[in-house]
Length: 555
Image 1 (cartoon, rainbow, N blue to C red):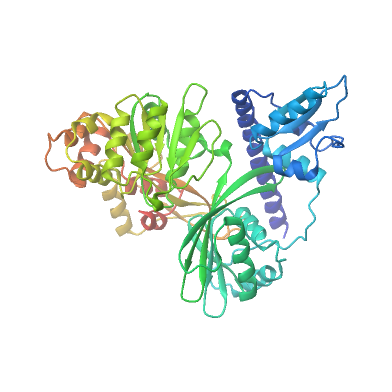
Image 2 (cartoon, helix red, strand yellow):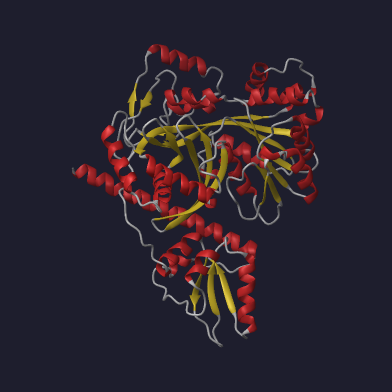
């Protein structure tokens, strides 16, 4: 038992460090945002737990919630009235407050504070009144007892709290999706954690109707529709002194026994959209930074849904985001909102196209353009034209590998010498579950596996094999641990990067006629040092970061 206590204490300490780092990032990001907005920045951590609460005549609780703003100091004819605003506070509110006090011959000072600071103060002004329910536990395979316990808890949650409770618990567990699925006699709730779906609970039909009613009301969709629908919800999560915004995409579809729903959770923490936090290897990171430093050209992200393309693209945009650049995006839908960037939604289900939107926004003189996806010839050609006329264009493209994307793009637009000077970098990536370092177990694989590893890594340069000994091959396997119920914790990115050099451009110019993926990949390996996805994944497994099973499952 002492071992468990020690591990719990260690886990709490690590969680505290993570929350502190998250808050530090949020404060730094808010300070930068304040400079862009022309507002003085204020670190609320210095007083948020001990501020003497004042609001008489300054602001109602309802206004605080609605305007995302709190009073900080009661003023007088000699002292300014002070307020803490957030990046979500409407500009019109700031203007009206300044005007109100100016008309009275007094001064209103408005400081920019973080969302975490706002929530801490708001919880003091308007303490939440709610019942505390047990936390959800993910059941291991065959563990029906845990599912029964969680089902009982979920069925007991108050009608007005069930959706918020489910979202909050999913976020606590690090889930990316919540699945609500109609079975014949019950409703199954599953959550996707680290890319794997896990059964969580079974709720009754009455609770399901309440849950779907709440989803419909807040996502502005019908809970009784007989067609598929899309919507979204935003929710602040306040935990351990830090706040982050969840942007939740809702998809519903009628099934045999009722309307199923999937809630995709995007953890909007702008400060965490940081390339340095994605675990990208040093060489790949250097290549990305080299490409994005240039004022023009095209960079494509390729991979299936759920491979982390959006997070990587948004992190690149965040790295490029400063007062000297104008950045515009076209997205369907907008997954993260980033201050300082103009983001434009494109509703492709109702006739809008990325190409039409791109032609319009190019007249706004952007430096950087991000397209949610290149789906057709018109969009591809317009994006190429933009990338050779002084714009840096980032986008995503559906293909399994960089070579396949290159070949498919040639098939889409034909041999195009202009494109050969436009495209500069392609990145294919996958997300795989990361082995928990505190419990993973080393083993020597069988001879057939060792031979497969040696064959897979043929031709990989010695500098890319750092930490790997093919004469003494060892792998690791997951072991269950109190902090990692499945032996994994978090995910890592497996990345394949093709830097387009003169030899690869030859396929686009028509100098080499057979532009199939195999030939393109072979040339990229020889002249550009390409490491394929399967090679990158195998190296990660040999370094004990993940398992071969995870790699082969994702690629």
